[in-house]
Every structure is written in structure tokens, then in C-alpha cells.
Length: 236
Image (cartoon, rainbow, N blue to C red; front, side):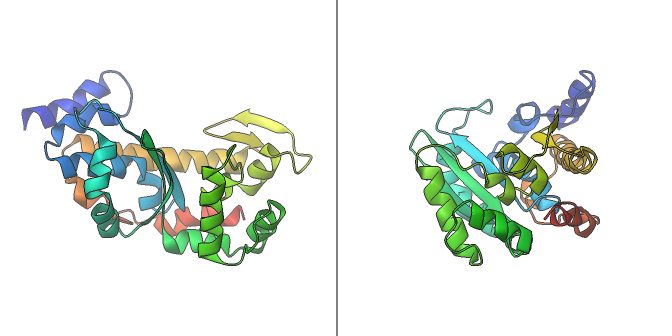
């Protein structure tokens, strides 16, 4: 208990939100350790502020003393099933695994938007109106050479920022946030701030000793999930 109580003040003294390395050792069970990492990495998706996130697990020992890549192989499927989210393994190279973890409802609603389908069709997706076909093609592109920059669409970034980054529209670069922002920065910065708040709330929960299995559940106690979802849906 002393270790749990010490985690938050130690970080507060640095003037920063707790990072996973600050509380990972609080969770002594392998499954809980992985669940705490996933809960933090998926905070925005669990709270309804993003449709999906990319999570990369390297095949090496982390600060908690465990190898999260190996723990994913053992516990990952069960944890994600219990969370209410879905997972698509985009690439598993042995040295690391790249996961697309998503809310089926939120990502489905986003990909159903006409403007999103127009972009995916322009990007060369053969069947932009079929959910599973789109994810399968994304997986193939990640496994191939280069990296599909249209992945920003799947992650709920404003479409103006995606097409601006890809050079598909004469939109000037405005500022650097968590992603490159083009055109009017206000909606993008508002979305980024919403993401930050979700991550902060989750990190504080975990640093205070919250059960990571409870934290790793869709819409876990956040009453603003519907409003948050409108941020990325309106971008489409």
C-alpha cells in the first residue's frame, strides 16, 4: 500500500502526469501489468474520444521487469475481449507486434462516413464500404514496404490534417501537435486536448492503485463518451 500511495506524490513533485513507468511495479501479477499498460495506451479509445489506437509491443524487458510482447501472447486476447474493444494484428515481426485496437461501433461509424470512404477510395482501397475488407487491406499495407499515411483516418484524426499531410489538398501546415496540423488549428487542438485529458485521467487512476482490469473497459466511468465521440466523427 505504501508503494501505491507514494506513486502519485512522486510524480506530482515533478509537475507531470504519472507515466506507466511510475506505477507499473504496483501491479505484480503478469496479467495486471499488461492490463495497466493497455489501459493507459487505450485511454482515449476506452473513453470514447478516439475510434482506435496503435499499440506497439517490443519483444524486450520493460521497466516492470516483464516482456509485454510475451505477456500479450499469453493474456492479450482475453484482456481485449473483456475490455469490449477489438484488435487487429497489423504486423508481428517477432521483435515486436503492432496492434490496431479499436471500438467496433466508433470505428464502424467513422468508416461509414461518405467523406472517409472518398479518401480511402482515393488511397486505393478496393472496397471502402466493407469494414473487414478495409481493415484487411490496411493490414496488408502495413506489412508491405513503406507505411500507409492514411492510417490517420482510422485513428480519428481530422480529415483536413490527413489530406494535408498526404499533400492531397492545398492546405498549409499550421502547427505541430501530437500530429501535424493543417489549416484551422482550433478543432485539431481541441481534439488533442481531449485526448490528453483522457490519458491524464487514466494515468492518475492507475497510479492510485485502480484495478487495471476495471480500467481496461470501454466507457469506464466517463459520462462524456458520446460527446467526445462527436469530435472525431464531425471531422469526417
